[in-house]
Image (cartoon, rainbow, N blue to C red):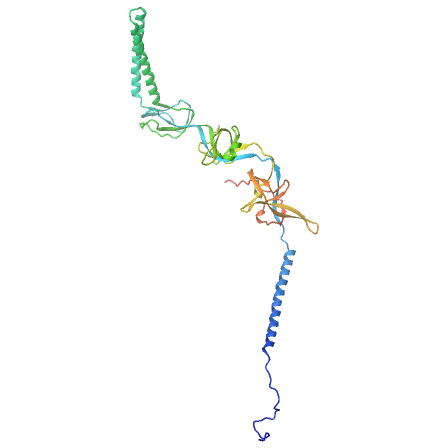
Length: 396
């Protein structure tokens, strides 16, 4: 065959190599490099932003929080024992009749004061008055007979037996008079003691049975305050100790009395002991049945550390206060910070709290403004006057 004349063969050299495509590995390398650069840029940006934020807050500290400060004091706190109770009248009774009868006259006005022996109610006593007249007549006749018998016996004209019989008749008549007088006195109901009357409970014409209440009678000049204390506190009580009382009807006022009776037995169900104090009531403003808060003044205890009641933060994790600490900065200036300190509290008296553990005398604590504080936060002591402790809400 003639190669030159073959029409399908071109003039290009036969041994020239064909073009090859770019390998996929190269594309993967390029894409990976770009992704790595992107991720690195993001990481660097986040690191740079965090450094800038940290530097910003480091150079822009918030101003110190203004708080009111108080000093922990060592003082003798009154040793008080508080309890609740009620008032009872020393003399109080529902006046009633001793016998049955119909009311014929009411001799008192409700709400007035009466003296002992004052007539209050008259019951129907006509039969007894008739019996009294009969016995008086019999006594008159018996007296005449007795005198005559004695005269005859003195002249020896009559036997002694006649004198004895006349004497017996006279004594019987006198006994009848005494009995009838007692029945008549029962029909006239009198006040057993001096006091103030309550509301009337009967009406004229009403038939009363023995024991039916007519009116209440109360002596308000002296009252009893009955209250209970726990078995643990019973050993601190003695007759004659001062008791201070407060009632809701007269806020801000304090009444005083003395312990007069301590129940010798402790209740087995509650393990409490009943105590009774006697209170003079010259103004007669205290009433039986009032709810009272009693405070027994016990002998003083040794001095303890106290802080204002508002300085203590009561939580489930324990009681704590913010102690104001001083520290020197690098530039030599002094700064104040509030450090939370857990304490053990005791009794609360007159707006102050006993601190049994955790503070010492002279420590400065935050009295007001601790709700917006965290431990270690910078503070500044406010010059504004603090409100009175305990704070008294306004009354309208």
